[in-house]
Amino acid sequence: MRRIGNSAIAAVTLLALGSGTWLLHGAAGTPAPPPQPSAAQAATGTDRPGAAAPALPPSPPDRVRIPSIRVNAPLMGLGLTKSGSLDVPPADRKNLAGWYEAGTTPGERGTAIVAGHVDNAEGPAVFYDLGALKKGSSVEVDRRDGTVAEFTVDAVEVYEAKNFPDEKVYGAAARPELRVITCGGGYSRATGYRGNVVVFAHLTGSR
Image 1 (tube, one colour):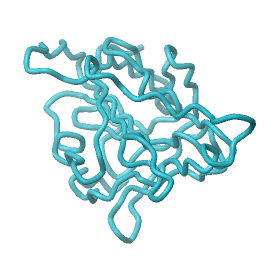
Image 2 (cartoon, rainbow, N blue to C red):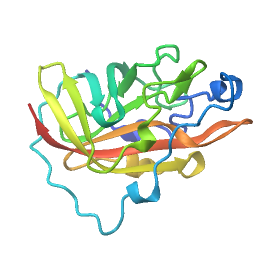
Image 3 (spheres, helix red, strand yellow):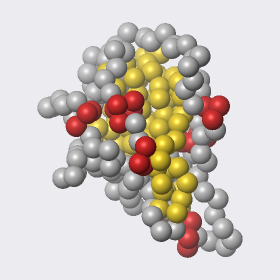
């Protein structure tokens, strides 16, 4: 597998991870938009970095689980589009997520990237409730070598597309870290979702 840095991902990252079409043409009444993280879930200057578990050897991931928001989804490999943005899973497979396979594998030293849709034309998708995740929640990744990488959430933040912090999200890390990303930041009838919800987590165990 050819490995390249996450810095190769352009800032026009993941605006295609949800259409919001169902919000406009949903069932009876007005469908509820996906939850957005509160200010209390953002990283603060007083947060103490949690202790990280030893890094695992590289191994492709096969499945991601986030028990507190009922996520249990297979993972596919994602590359980059011609514009340099991260590609996305097929929109019609709403319970499928993806990982950036040219970057760090979840559990090894560095920053691993997982992304999935918040919705599709039919309704909520795999990461619809990502914005409701809380600090201290668990994220588990099943790896192809038979191990499970266990992560603990450090922060959940939302960014407008024009202010997306590329280095903070994609930058290199000295310990095993994970980012889980979907669309968010409010919804506009004219332009769709305005930004992205990003979960920051670090490795705290394995089995």
